[in-house]
Image (cartoon, rainbow, N blue to C red; front, side, top):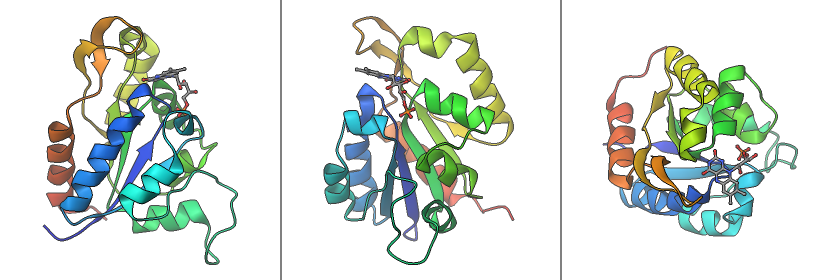
Length: 184
Ligand SMILES: Cc1cc2nc3c(=O)[nH]c(=O)nc-3n(C[C@H](O)[C@H](O)[C@H](O)COP(=O)(O)O)c2cc1C
């Protein structure tokens, strides 16, 4: 497959560190990876780590001065062949379902015409909550794809559905989406 521009959106989940392996794998496959993280994600993982692994500048702030005369979220959105939110919190899923654009990641996603893949990771009660179920249904309706979490040990100490899916499954899904012809 031809090299693609992949945006990895990272949110404030305990599973944020798993994005590191995904970034490394996508790079090994020849893709260019750019990270956009939320402020809460930085409680779990640093911009420095993500820039080092991706080999590209990693972004978090909406209002930082751009390198060139470009609006950051719009230029990131334009270049992306796919946006993968991994891990995706209940919060970002709710914000995307509600059209809320109050940070760089949500603004980038909503400015983009590229496919969006969401990889949720959360506590089992959060995942089963009717609000989360409804938000996921809404996002599926508008064409967002998901890699569902699995049953397993959760950071809160319980065991249930909400553990982030395996790297292999996520990578397979990304490749499958990238192989499909783009609409529009
Ligand atoms: C230790 C810890 C782990 C967390 N892990 C998760 C998680 O896996 N999934 C989730 O939806 N929220 C998790 N949260 C809550 C989110 O960090 C919180 O909802 C935050 O506002 C998400 O912001 P963001 O979606 O903008 O990154 C966690 C919070 C803490 C303190």
